[in-house]
Length: 276
Image (cartoon, rainbow, N blue to C red; front, side):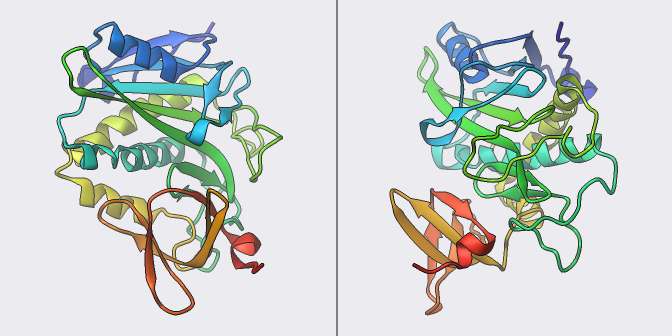
């Protein structure tokens, strides 16, 4: 039976957790809680998710032993700032995974890793993935709804491939077990709950967005390298320069023009360099 507990920082900050052996979707459970009047500050965590979903309506595959965790919050911030919470979650996941992984586990990856300086063990991929050895280890999904009194509630879903990665993905994927790391979903969740408190505190109702984005950039995959962004059948290629103060990906094309990207699927390596 799964036993999900909060880390000490999360407990002290007043967060709660509802744990499940199996659930359809932790995000759906959190959204239902909003409609039932929950004030927020609660995690929904499961070691098996049977009907998970990812970005753009895609199915999120999760086998028993992987982590699915969704946090319900009602932030006191403007909608444009609330949109940056995905970066808060990315930095928190990065910290959590780094805290439970032994040093030296990962090789330098090829999918956006920085190879030259050897620093890329875990990397953040815009907009909402965590990579290990260049393959997807974790993903994030933000959803919003209104509380009964009209405020904006945010559900931040985090999935981590703890024991297995899906095999039928259009991108490389990996798991902690495949990387030789023996950790449980419960251990990863406890680390995540504490890391969230740290980074959310830095975010500070949106006043600390720039600090969070600076940390995100420092762990980003592919900055300075070729990148291809696909959206609705259109592919834009260029050099990944940075993310701006709103979290948009900035690419520079062959003519030197800079383009802000708000959404799309990101590809590095040979895919990014290929020309049709």
